[in-house]
Amino acid sequence: AVAAKLRTTGRVGVQLSGGLDSGSVAATAARLLAPEPLRTYTSVPPAGWAGTAPGRSIADERPAVEDLAAMHPTLRPRFVSVAGASLFEGYEDLWELGAGPTRNPANRLWGDAI
Image (cartoon, rainbow, N blue to C red; front, side, top):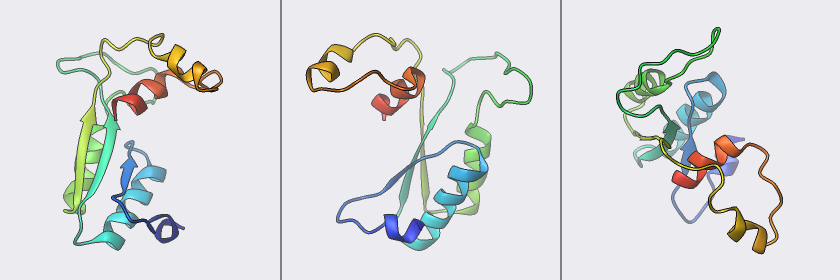
C-alpha cells in the first residue's frame, strides 16, 4: 500500500506522529525511497514548553520521531510548532472557495504550517 502511494512525479512527505501507524508508514516509505531523502513533519510544543499530557498521552512526540530517524538515516524530520496561531484565521478564504467546516481545527493549524 505504501509503495502504491509513492508513485509520483514530485517529492513525498509524511505527517509523522510518534505513533505506530505513521511511524510504520514513514519507515516503509524511507526504505522504499532510499537513497532519496524523505521529509517528515511533526507537530511539537513550542520551545521551552514544560507542560504535561493527560493520562498516558504523549505531549511531545519529538523523541520518538528522532529515534525513528536514527534508525532510517534518509528520514529528514521537520518539527512544526503552531504556538500563537489562531484557530479562527483563514476560514473566510476557504469558505469562499466552497469549503465546509474543518473537522479538526487543531490539526488544520499544523497542516497549514506544513
